[in-house]
Length: 451
Image 1 (tube, rainbow, N blue to C red):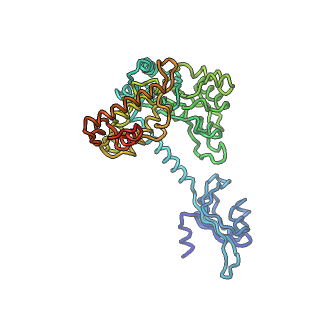
Image 2 (image 1 turned 90 degrees about the horizontal axis):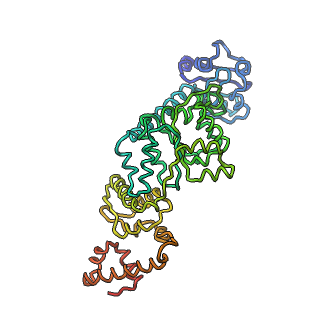
Image 3 (image 1 turned 30 degrees about the vertical axis):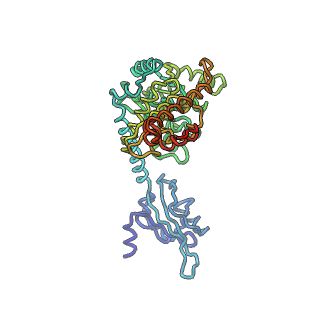
């Protein structure tokens, strides 16, 4: 009766004695391992299977829990629990293995991963429907940027390779979003790859994929690379300057031939991909330093578009701030806005981290404020108040120090005037000056203003 129960188990079971002779194998043992069913009782296990883990456990008496390995005869992947067996006197009398076929499970997991990836892709694509929204993302009040916008709109209508350059945080990824969203490929995949974030040892497999059995640990069904995933759509190569030289050669070949080969494969796979590359480095300098292939540089530099830093887009700082604040207001329901003093500070600050820094600064401010408040300077990160608020220019009529002292004089006079108008009522004076309580009292002390 008990044997009949064991034979109905979905898991395979094998029991051997202390001499590695088979004492019992259930029905699933034969089915999972693909062994022809026959009576193997009392046979040496090595005559049936070679290099078995159960024999290792028998020798070492160290159990193996949830160990995974391939059954070489059939290629079936096994997950097993293998333990030594003892009698009542704690004498070793054999070993037992209970295992299952994980091949089907892994195939289902691979399918699930692909479905999750496709779901994420569809969600992302909802944001890539060509619309007025894309034009709004690149609108600018600066003449210098209007020419860039026109170039982006024209470039989006082509399939040419585009090279976006600019400082970190200057909006290269947003520009890539716009280029894809306004292109004829907008309904197709938009795959983003940060070349600086992928370990060099994994880069080739990430870009070109691999076939089944290409290397130890490879997924049995193989793996599609970024080029295949982006087929028909756009592949965005961010931080292209950090790509290792060996991979640059393979990328150049893929761009020229419009074909790739998976690792371990011999079949060429045709690809239809539009390339957008981006970097904050000077690629031509890297070429001269022998760190970037010259032929790849010219292959990527078909339509170069340089995005200026935020400090050169002074008129855009407040509109961008408003856009980001509206986004955070929608998420947090705080309904914040910028105070007059913070607007002034934002306009004079140099923004070395560009739009990314602006967004991070406002996120910090949202964490420091209560619902309905105006964002004041003391809500901003401390480093912003310590860092120079204006880049020095030798063409200016006066030095930065002279301008700063002039600003302090005006601010002190404004505070004195506000106190006079309110009969030294400090709370009312703060409101007139759009200053927070902390800022107001700090400046009273700094300017040595007595009531």
